[in-house]
Image (cartoon, rainbow, N blue to C red):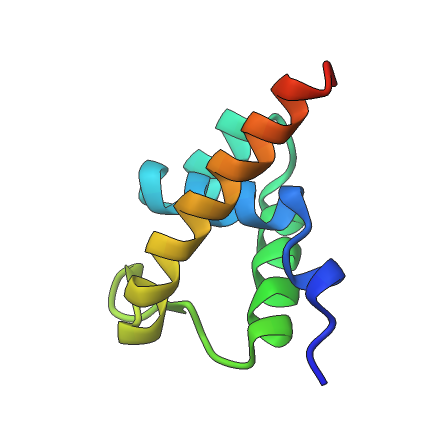
Length: 90
């Protein structure tokens, strides 16, 4: 059974979205203020949790077909998380 608490952890979703928006793990790390290995670890953990690769890394970084589908859900998850935090003053 999938552990949704770990899968939907905000930092993993935020890292995924930042990699997508930045276009690379290195650029995402700079935007997030963390190391590139930390971003890679968050993405690897998220991929393990969902059970499929989100990115093709060769010849250049791109979303897999499953990653494309997941992207829409990830954006909605992050929006809901941000709204909940705003509503509860966190």
